[in-house]
Image (cartoon, rainbow over all chains, first blue to last red; front, side, top):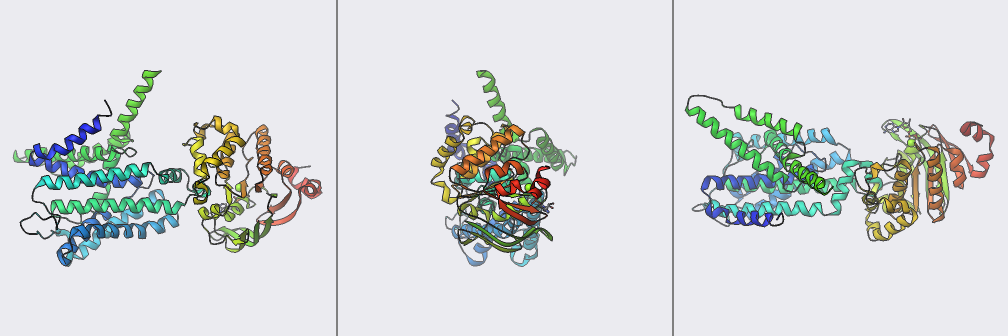
Length: 328
Length: 234
Ligand SMILES: Nc1ncnc2c1ncn2[C@@H]1O[C@H](COP(=O)(O)OP(=O)(O)O)[C@@H](O)[C@H]1O
Ligand SMILES: [Mg+2]
């Protein structure tokens, strides 16, 4: 029974775009893009490498792709890999000194937080090319659908692009989970010195996972850009987005493959519901602008206190606990 | 096998080791004895690459160690059993052992070495799926030594393996050390438990306030008046 569930979900995901109205399909696409980003973050987050700088990698993914397209006419098929490499280099430049000088825990989080602000400020400062705070729109190719430009006027095609990227993210999560590197990183998160004594290349292992995480996040940023055809320094970067990434993963569950995806579903639906609710109140003359973010923040705090393993982690624990009781 | 010449080391501006020169020959067991704070742990960390020395030379089988990071020093055949064992308490005994074979040079022999460790310490085989943190102190020490052996080393560095253990267990730990010796490993051990450690090693150095003040054969040191007075309270 439980074995058939993934197949049923897989089938539903494949047929979804042909039977879903535009608005839910849009939500589905956004969920898949953010799930990819959250999964990418959890690749390193699950090993205690808490980055508050992933907004920077998303921005790099989006802006490098879009700038190469608008100014040099370079197709996103080349631009996206270039953006991913740029994110890897940026991750290396920031993480290598941190790991070499044993900057860990809160201090590492603070350094990465600074990174997300620096990248945002650079984008704003280069407004002549990036549009600054006003945002940036990739040039449309022809009538809006072009394989070469990775632009699709219909949501259905784009849905399959992001579905593929999301599956890729999960496959990478699974490969890491089954690899020797996971052993190494688990032990590093328990005790760096003892891991070094056991012959584990501590700095190297942490660098590898950080760069992998950054690269996948950049892919998420680039796809966001190609889909929305609009990006802004605060829309896909800065502290706001960096924190959103951490919160969503914590809500969904940090230590399970589907946790970040569940986190994306919960947080996106929550924001949508609040937004619609507040919009409808406004038509009745009640202005509660900003209330949505407050409630959202409050709920997240409650999640962190009462469900630290996230919704999926808690569910799995409960089910496993129940099963153990059955057999005893 | 291991040669240190004029090694100075410490933390930041604080110097913990002054002009240390010592050697360990293949097949030997050598102890470095000293009170708390003498610099014993620092010495072990310098040899295994976890703390960078200020100056001095270190060689393993003629190869300079100075520029190597810890994981490469493991590949050169030096395994470190750290102070306080430092197991991964949330992992099973077997996972702890397998992590010891993480070095590139050790991976292909991992299964063979695991068999060897289980043969050497049958207790570990019984406990293979238990969480390492839930074992007794003596068993944890066994696991820590086993983890070091998993890297297929020539030289074992042991940092106070008897610290914090009950007297009966201390006896067992030193018989483990003796077992290790009989298997042909070269051992450099630091200890405060002078009486006991001198029973299992060939030679010893005395370390005080970061300086080596004396050295000699175990037998002679055991009989030396100054050692008996200073370290054994006799
Ligand atoms: N991480 C550290 N930072 C600063 N000083 C240290 C550190 N570790 C040890 N020391 C100091 O170095 C000296 C030697 O310590 P250590 O090598 O741990 O001695 P032992 O192992 O013989 O007890 C002590 O004075 C200790 O306070
Ligand atoms: Mg010590």
